[in-house]
Image 1 (tube, rainbow, N blue to C red):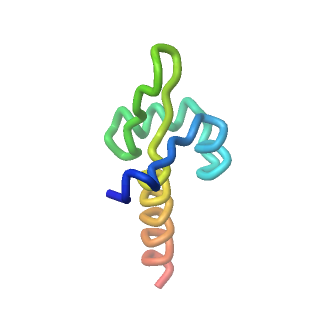
Image 2: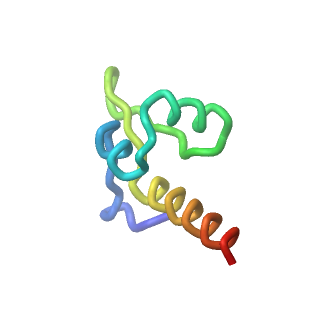
Length: 69
């Protein structure tokens, strides 16, 4: 886990822009345990920890590159 001073929460638009995945697919993957779980920011807002989303992306890149080799 990163330093608490480096924690950043990403909202839906940012996660969609970074991953290319739409909200419905994110929910499916999250429910299946294949995408980081969102956190509650307030009563009506949630988001994802940036480092967890980056780890997910890095894992997808590694998986993709590994299959090509």
